[in-house]
Length: 191
Image (tube, rainbow, N blue to C red; front, side):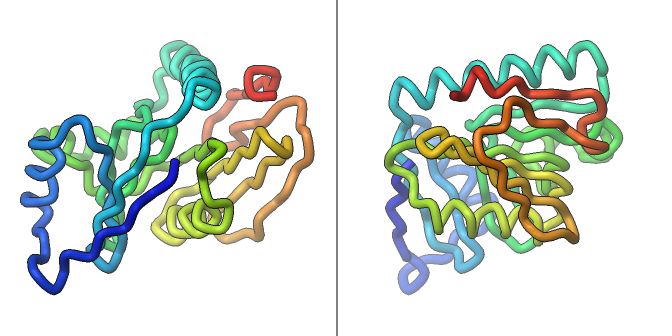
């Protein structure tokens, strides 16, 4: 998604509640907020990216229903990260115990928690460097495992907490490792 950055800080700095209200009052607009408090307006994805996202999400949801280890979230979910940014990964997952530790209000608004796992699927209009920065931000905020998938060049970057980025070319499958035990994504749904 191409993001447009708007800096309203000289005029107004949104509180968390005001940012939440802004998003609720504009349900057709996908907002994120970076650590500087700037608003990011995200464009919708195209058909191919939406199809891939749906296929990927289905595999995660089926695995999660079977294993009951956590909670799955689609790209509409916005999280308040520890660094103050509000981000919406294309897919994310949180261990059940961590999710259950949040209050009802925290779960209802933008959960103040970094997911355990995030996935970003590049669309044709995404900026590769900006999406890589976003993945680094996730890891710096406590995400344990992240996948950045670029279908155009058939490349996956795997981000792990405390480790260097691993780059794979045209993998057949991806493992959820110890973060998503037993999960394997067959990459034929992406390629």
